[in-house]
Image 1 (cartoon, one colour):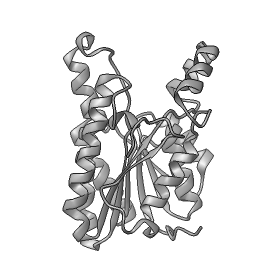
Image 2 (spheres, rainbow, N blue to C red):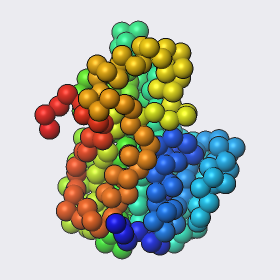
Image 3 (tube, rainbow, N blue to C red):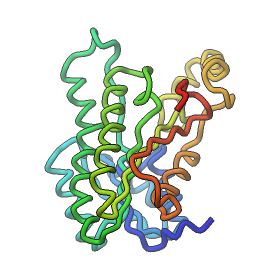
Length: 253
């Protein structure tokens, strides 16, 4: 399917590895002008060599307000405008709520939630000028139901809520905002890879008990849904949260 993304200017946070890198690959294959963001220059350069195409890189710590502002300014200066923003950067920390220090709650919200809120607000101002644009927030099935570490769960829940609020606010300006909620995804830089190596039998049992599809998902399976949401093929989708999880979620909707 031709998603008609040729020439679209796409910015992906956390794009140097895992799901973010897979998203970048799909957009490049569709002919988009893609830029990825990450903290480590070495990882960014490796991803650029691997992906090729029109990919450009930005080194930034998006947990910092001033770096987020500088990022959008630099991207628009380089590309002229922003058509698609994928808020993919994130991570988990801490443990049980009663055992997790407050600074970890704050840092989790800054990375997983406030960064996406701020970047979305900045991007929307440019998208409104063209009366077109798409923002996709990468959340988690554990933002829709309990599970995972509490700091991550809280932040992703907030991001799903923000997605719907912003979507309803800007759809009349031609800007669509949606979110993708992955289940357990296996990739080289992820926690599941480490857990699989440390306890293969335990993870095998986890898959049997928790994932009806009988396997982990792949980054590419997330990336394909993101690209679809960014395209005009998804023109009537706004404020949606889509589970991509092989049946792992226990929700009925």
